[in-house]
Image (cartoon, rainbow, N blue to C red):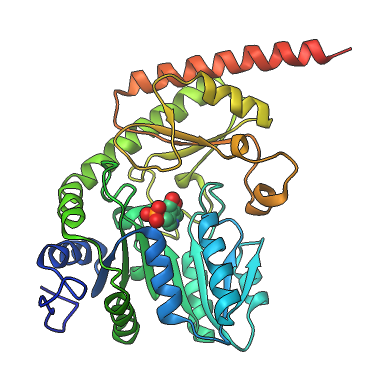
Length: 357
Ligand SMILES: Cc1ncc(COP(=O)(O)O)c(C=O)c1O
């Protein structure tokens, strides 16, 4: 097996486990990298990276629009461990460059951001980080290594919630951290062992089962997502939608429109329209997660008070509904979305008319 080169220590499960090692080897083959470490959740993957690679006095730059729990975790880490954070609202390389300080050690991104699909160009950040000796970490959960390979583009570390598409069946919580750098790997491995953050073998076994169909599932997610967007463009041309393949940096980041993860967003003109839409879906249920076999939607505005600044800072419009397009029959998905869109249009138009003096 290439990578994770030291002899694995199977004497105790906190150090290593044969089933987990098989999953890691398969993951390395998928990601074309040298080292991968499986851990027990995506948030653990983030914590491992922060604990192992940042020390007191270091500075990290993150965009506002990444998964909000990562920002919470980082704020806590920073306050407890004397790490400085800059959370920025513009995502071009120049904005990152402007935030760099002499003690900047890490830039942590998602590309594109989740759930707003904001554009981040990995190659331009790779260049910046190489110039300034900064560790570029990419949370690649949204796209999986099948659709985007940040390490091959030059990032130092990638991490994943394998809870999402990588396992795909909604029955595992797990994470993965990968790198090609032996020094970073050593620090990551030490912290995983000492804190017992390793994935459990049964979850590893389930994830190996999930990996077997990952490319097939992604193809079907992609085809179904394209069918949804085609229907929206034809029947609801005034509606704004977002998708990974339509971001400006998609090509530079290696994303092809024919293969991605089926994540899209519909941006309704108001919070109320978003709420109305999700309430009228019948097949597609609300779920905070994504990447499962079944379609799921999430309307951030339904769970946030309008006017509170959190979503605005994240660049998420109050009317944005993320849809993780699943593997059901494409016509069933489109019928559900079409019906809910028609009802939303009727209800929001009649409410607007009633409100008009
Ligand atoms: C982009 C991203 N990163 C990390 C996580 C955390 O993963 P987990 O829920 O497996 O801890 C999530 C979870 O939703 C996520 O969406």
